[in-house]
Structure formats: structure tokens, C-alpha cells
Image 1 (tube, rainbow, N blue to C red):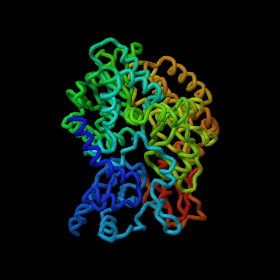
Image 2: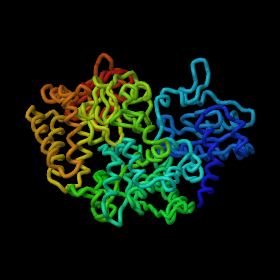
Image 3: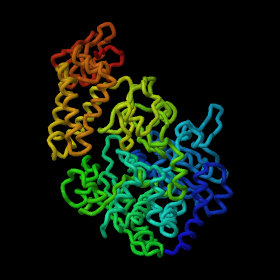
Image 4: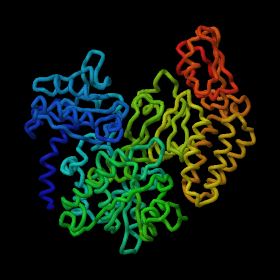
Length: 630
């Protein structure tokens, strides 16, 4: 492909992509650019797919065909972000945001909105886009989207990810063209250094410095790697980028290859991401066809190729040296550092490794300049950060905000607050390596340094919101169960330490704990910090230490009073029936799996606590609120 051909593709479709981005009435403009009167974008990401968005697309195409509507284009996109409302369908040029769509809803929209002269079906819209007066506002102005700044996610939910021409029109490969035709490798690295971009995979190491180390290595073979393993519980940021805009990663890896003198890259992605893997391979094949990967890219003489490697889902393979061992075909285990991968990495050659979100920021930095990027966020944490917002929050989904945005803004404004009138208790960030931020620190700016100062960390971007019904001892135990199971076992501090910590936590949640156990936990945590081989073991105690720091009284209640205030730890619970409320309906007795409840019809029932397994089914089935759990 020549530069002229690339520009022709970009110019042909760019205005169409712009119409989708602006979310305003531009019907005439859309019709003048294409034969389509309207375009209907349906989320094809994993979240909405699991809610049957493919059935929505099938019904949409079927209904359009039955009514003979040929001037409406159906586009399958990546994630729109507001996953709690999936499947999502947006109609352009109006920008009508339809939420929780079903095949039946689709028929209603087609017959009332998509026909010529039709109008928006307000009752099926995302409620946040309809005011009390019935006025429809652009979804970009709703609380969920208003404070976001989508840089890494710029094309997700906007383009058809399996169409390279839409990716080109949306700006992908423009930075590669700029780099190959007007910048030296040093220029590229200097731009990355000046941008202040830090790795979005967890540690936050400056990206430009990593690239500079690899460029300085004197070796004729070097590698560029993408970490798409993303093993944190509740994290789906990288998956969504790969599903919504895979070309941005391929382009960034090629740019890095040019900067450090590499001609080959690997994308390490877990096999549990079938949609991402499929779209990545389609993108690689398309990029080869269009001359944007392979030999003599854009006629500049630069060669670069990319290959996918599937991971088996080992959390430890998120650690860079373990990931490289896995790519080589070995068991995924970390190795001591130094030497660092930039000197001796994959196949013992200089290697740079960044995660998906880091790569997604490269194009905007090259195209808009380092000064632009560094003006966003804070002086030491520039740019934006993508978070997978989950847990006890109204707006579960994917959000991207400038660094320095406060936790309060994310929880109360973007996240829509805690459902069911519950109180915010804490936010867990950084996954199994991170910590809990209590309500007293809700005004903390979300950036690398601020989170470290209060005992948490950025991590890859999982953010789990916890409400007043959460037991913090149980949360710490949950993450320890995960890390103990995921430890590769290579080093003793991690292999034995995680299991011993889990034993101590289990002892406490079962009401058998002693105050000496807390001291043992703290001592063992320090040993693991100091002597574990990799970050998995070094950071495994973090969830415990942060909960001890801010919620120590809950540990002491479990030990001294045999009490779990959140009523989560089963061993500390007891069930009883209030005879003044029980009507003798027998529902509880009929649903008890161990026959622990007895009584006559229309007479108060009783629970045999020696038989009760504390499953909670009795409470779920009681219609009179007669069962008490203490």
C-alpha cells in the first residue's frame, strides 16, 4: 500500500466516523457521505455478547429485511463502557442510546424509529439520556460519560473492529505513517519520555525509559511484546480494547519496533478471551493485506511482524519474565532480575513488554504530541487510566478518566453511587496485589503516588466497590485464596507463605482466631515482601495489610466477640425463627436442604442449630421476615 492509498481510505470514511463521535443531528451529512440514512451500532464485546447481543443483531437484520429497509447500516462494535445496561444499541445520527435490548425491543425500534419518518422510542432509551421533562440529551452528557476522557478507548464502541478501513478512518496507523516518514527512532523515544506515559500494567514504570534501555542494547535481534494476559479478578480493560480496537495495538507495537530496532513482536493473550483472539487475528491478517505489517511497510523499507501466543490462564504469567518463559514454550515461572528484559528477555534477546492499555496510548501521543498528553492528569501520573468498575456500584462498566480524578467522582458521579441505599465502605484497587481504600479516603486523587501513600496501588485497573454488607476479613481471604492458588511454586516464600497466610485468615473467619495470629500475619507479610522472587509473592499480603490498617476492628471482633458485623462469615452466624412473626407456612422447612427446620402448619417453627449448615435458603424463602441471622 502506498501513502496515497492510505490517505484515500482515511478520507473516504473519516467523516462517517466523525458523525458517530459527535452524537448530534447530522442526518443530511450522513446521507451525503453514504447511501445509508441511519447507522445502528450494537455492542459486540464479551459483556453484551453474554447478554445475547448477537440475538439482538440477528433480529435487527431480520426486521430490517422484512420491512424492506435497505438504507440502514448495522455495525457490530466493541464495548461502549456502560456494561450494566447491555445489550446496548445506538442509532446514528441521532445518537439514540437504547439499553438492555431484547429481540422484542428491536422490533419496536425498527417499526417506530428506523422506518422513514420514524421517531425515537423514548421508553427504551437509557434513562440517563431522558430528562424529567422528556427531553432527550446526548449520552456523552450523562453523568457516566461526562467526566470521562476516552484516549485508550477512543475507538471502542465507535468503529467496527473487524474492518481495517474503519480503523484507518478513525486514526489508526496515522502515527505509524508519521513515525516512518518523518521521525527518527530517537525522536520517537524522546516523545515517549516527554509524555510521561507510565506502564498501565501495574508497576507504572516509565514507558520511554524502557524503550530507551532496549534501544541501547547492542544486539541485532530484539523483540516487542504485548501483555494481554489480564488475570486480575474483575478486570476486563485490556480485553475490551482488543475487542474494540485491535489495530491500535498492532500499530503501537510496530512503532516501538521501529524505535528500538526490532522486527518481530508477540501478543500474549489468554485463551479465555476468544472474541479478542479472533479479532486480533483478523486485524493481523488485514494489516498484512494492506501492507501495514510485514515487509517494507508503506514502502519505507521497515519490516515488522506480529504473532499471537495463547496463555492457559496462569495469573503468574502477567509477570514479564514468566510471560516470556511461557512464550518460549516453558512453564510460566519468573526468573531473578537483573538482567532485566530490556537487556536479556525473550529468547535471551533484548525485549520490551507493555500491556494493552499502554500500547493504546502510543498513537495519540505521537499524533497530538507529548505536551498535549502530559497536560492531562498530574505531573507524575500523566494521561488517563481505564478502570473496570465493578462490585456494589450502580453503573458497572468500563471507565476512562484523567489521572487525579477523585475516588468520590468515580463512585458517586460516574458510577452512580451504591445501589439499594447502602453506604460506601471501601474500594479495592490493584486486584490481588492491591489494597482497600476506605470511605475516609474517598476524596483521594486516583494516581500512582496517591494510591501508594494510602496503602493501595493502581494495578492494571480493576476497581471493586464494596458496601456496608462486606466483611473486610472475608475480602482479604478471597484474594489470598486466589494468590495461593495462582502461585507458581518456584520460590518458598510465596509457595508456603500464601498458604500459611490463608490458613491464618481462615482460622479467624471460623471464629478460632487469636490475637497472636494478627502478629504472625504481619511478620509473615514482611518476610514475603522482602524475599519472594516476583511481584506475585511480594504483593500477595497487600490486601490483608490494607484491611488491617483501616479495618483492624473487624479482625478483632472476629477474634474477641466471634462476630462478623457484615454477617458474611458462616461459622460465626446463627439462625433463629421469631415465633411472633412465623405464620407456620412451612416454606422454610420445605426448602431446607438438611431438614434442620421443624414445626406444624400454622404454628411457629424452630431451627435445629446442630443440623443447620447456614446456607441462607430459609431467609430467602421466608415471606414474613421471621428468620433472624446473627
